[in-house]
Image (tube, rainbow, N blue to C red):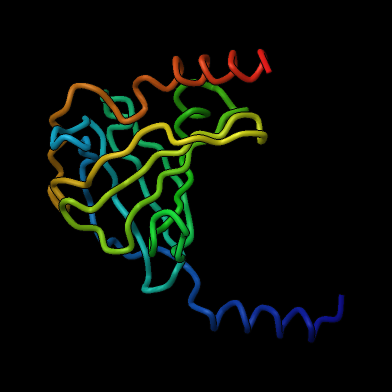
Length: 164
C-alpha cells in the first residue's frame, strides 16, 4: 500500500476523535418494577459516539466483563448505545451466544435499559429490561444479576427453534 495513503488514513483516524476512555457514569441495573439487580456498569466515552463499558458485579460475585458500542438513533429506543458484553464467553465459556445491552444516551435514574440475546448468529430476542438506578452510585443490592436466568432462556429458545 502507498505509504502516503497510509499516512493520510492515519491522520484521518487521529483527527476523528472516535475513541472512548473518559469515565462518564456508573449505575445499577434496576427492574421494571423498581427493584434492583446485583450488577451494574461504568460507561467511558470521550464526547464521541464511541462508548466502552465495564459490566460490574456481572455474576453477583464480583466479576467484571467488558464491551463496546456505538451511540446512535435506534428505531425501538431512540438515541441510545447498543453495547456488547463478554459475559457468556468470560463467565460460562459459551461463545455461540451474544449479549447486547441497550443503554440510553443520557444515563440517569429511571432511564430504560434493555438486554438482547443473540443465538448462533441466526436469531435475536429481548431477554430482559428495566430502568437504571443509583446512577453514579455504586450500590449493587439485588440478589440476582440481569443475566441470572439466561442459560434457561437460551435453552427454551433453542428448543423452540429446533421444533420449527
